[in-house]
Length: 219
Image (tube, rainbow, N blue to C red; front, side, top):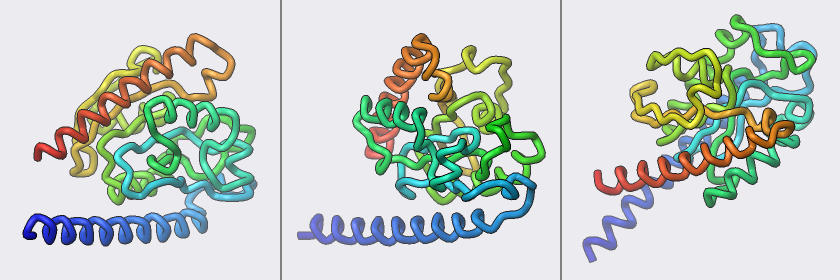
């Protein structure tokens, strides 16, 4: 009887935390939609704050929205997004199980790389998303997101291929997390070897998620 009551209380607390997290993410998305801190918003259709599960154990961070993302307001909805969904499916997850975001929230003109000043203007939003979600594992898709997130450890690198699939345990914004850099899915659309590398890295991601879950249960 007592165990049942405890489970009900814990479930209720979890539901309340999920509701608060969802509201916080939605409120932040509204702020991002009105952001004018850098010029990127001027020639775009939509901000792309990020979407998914606000209580996710796994958060994926890309670099910047592309054309399809700009049109829909959602991250990773083009061909690279379909590849990403396939990689998630391979470890038993869907988009609804994870949270996906980018380091900048508006599309750079012509899909160019985001500039340093744009990253500085936009990343406080990403940092707040990480604080709200509190993921156990963060996967950085591509060199720009990897370089930004790993700078907090700090870890430096020249090429993403040098460090992809490496697990970096750390504390990010007072939250223990496993950080895993990998290739951007768009790179694998034109290079079969990169596709194999991504599949290998996602198997590592699946194992790290399972290990993080086991650690939580033991605590």
